[in-house]
Image 1 (cartoon, rainbow, N blue to C red):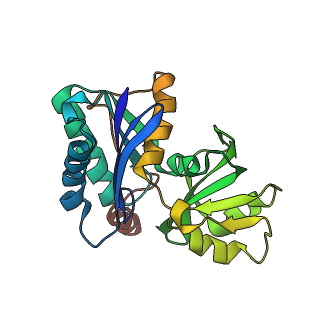
Image 2 (image 1 turned 90 degrees about the vertical axis):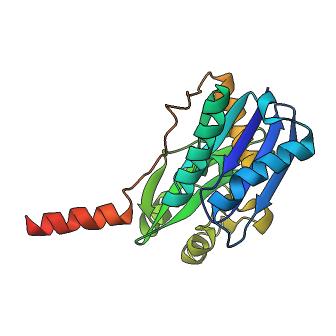
Length: 235
């Protein structure tokens, strides 16, 4: 089975072609260009360079959230469009879970943290043992103070990944000696890790139709939160 995997959940964008036994190719770009400008051209060029036409893809996987509201929408919309045109199954991957797959082969806890602003991070914690990734909690938006209290219960080496990793590390490093910042080459979400997480879901028959694939937001967009707050104040 050949998967086309996409990620636009933060500032960087990436696409990956993969089969269960190998990564065929991956493009990763972190520039000021918007994902709507770069994503589809990257996918088309990758397929061309790899000699794998889009029509030979068996499934489309995407980091469906959490993450940037605009970025997640672009990635999911692109995945739906590519899959709908070719009647392909889709795989919805948690952005946080995909980052745990950056550490396959290790023996550690992976604490995925993305900046959610408002003194919070999007977070989930995973235990990685060799090729096995075990989820220890659900994806959530959590305050750094609460995350610190939770991480205190673990004694294993804990690696921080994601665009909230540096902020979290500065907050935690003086109180938790077992918490480390992931190296820069393994800190970001990538489409290759999306593909690896997607293969696991496909084996468990966890696929969606293009119509069923939707963004996963852990909070309402700020504009909607502000509107609700104003309406509440008026009441």
